Image (cartoon, rainbow, N blue to C red):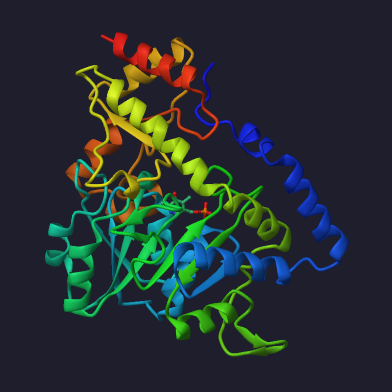
Length: 363
Ligand SMILES: *Cc1c(COP(=O)(O)O)cnc(C)c1O
């Protein structure tokens, strides 16, 4: 069986270094908000090209704390793509603000800049862009609209660690960005983890307090904050793994390039790469076909594991029953047709060739 993603094998590459830094944290006797978190925050902000980074407990918290720090709440609207993973939408709902779903471009799966303006009202406070599957959004027109209407731009970078847009990294393309280090992401930890990157000093200072009960000074609280901290152990692991992120992303690009150049089956729509392959870090390699379930069964019968990202759009979830009657045609088509092929930095060329061969034989 060719697995969709082999996490054990990915982390086994660095097992000795990971065990050694984990032991250092154990021996230090300091487990929360210490030098490992500081070190990772400095290293990750410098990697992304931003002035600041704040480690938090997970990707959802990263996004929802940004919304909270900007004081976006009840009565406010935030634009978000209709085909994103539910967490982007939940981050807005968690602050009692209203998510306004906007359709993606069918080729890039990312927010369609031409559909944003007609969804802006006097209540709109921000646009949350999601660099879905690892490809950065078309930011230039989005930033122009944001400037025109004085909106914040929040990036959901949970699938785009290391991606570029016109020479800048994802995480440095808007006002603030949320990252997830969930184990399966391009930069994954051994549990839950997340971070926020920004160049906004005021926002940064506020976030440092918000993640820690709203406290800026021990036992003094400026805000009604939360407990959403990145653990020392996780930060130490991330610092090791960050050194290998670019290398792992290059490996993903090689695999994607092989798929793109060699899958010739006319029944399958390949993902489109906008302008520059550096824009894409291939968190997922997502193809599309009208016979998605049939193709998935065929691949499984031939020893290839695939996944669906995602089977149900946010507006059709029970959690958002108030939206169930709405139709978002492009998003619904995407959810019916997408299939994610095996993609990981430890996939071998032989395995990739085998996937291509099996797909090309599909009738
Ligand atoms: C994974 C993911 C999140 C949430 O991250 P967690 O760390 O799992 O909370 C948010 N947005 C997108 C697009 C994701 O893929």
